Image 1 (cartoon, rainbow, N blue to C red):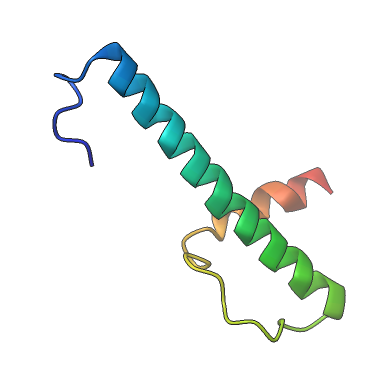
Image 2 (cartoon, rainbow, N blue to C red):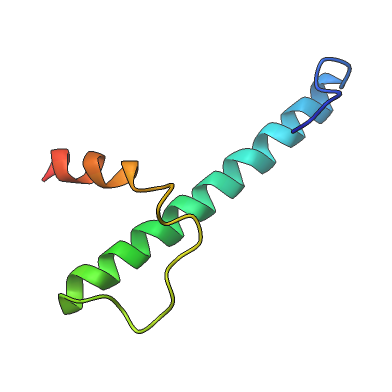
Length: 67
């Protein structure tokens, strides 16, 4: 993903790391919102399926364990 990671300065690595964290948080939160909307109505929402929904299915097991 970042081919020059080893050669990047500490400041650049920190910036990249923060960017990746923000992107992950955004994708995760969108998935959680999609799942919550599905639970509310009992059926799938009228919106289209969220991006990476199938790939993020592992997050469901964590939510079920907390219930």
